[in-house]
Image (cartoon, rainbow, N blue to C red):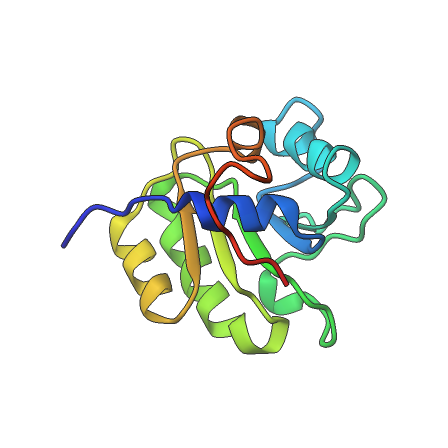
Length: 154
């Protein structure tokens, strides 16, 4: 199996297209990275976030859910952003694949330090785009409109 490579066009599309992101691992703890990154996604990029955490806490004014499967029908989630460790991310990827059609999931974003080549391959085989082992806050300054990535946004 070839190692996954992040596509700059996919990253650019995800960071420059208004959408809803389910942030898996986002609880109400302000000391966690997921908390600050989700806030940045809301404030700086204007994205809607849906917290997904076993506590199902409301975070940054958005209702939380314990699992992707608990997100109500009719909610369109373009990206599943994974703030879980590498050993657990495969379960999240499999749930995203299972919920793909119901929620309209198009992509998975595995955060900095989260790597699972097999899970990435399963997601891509299911038709999902995958960004792995990086953070939107790191990528955003690198990927700007007109950077030559030629992303098609809808």
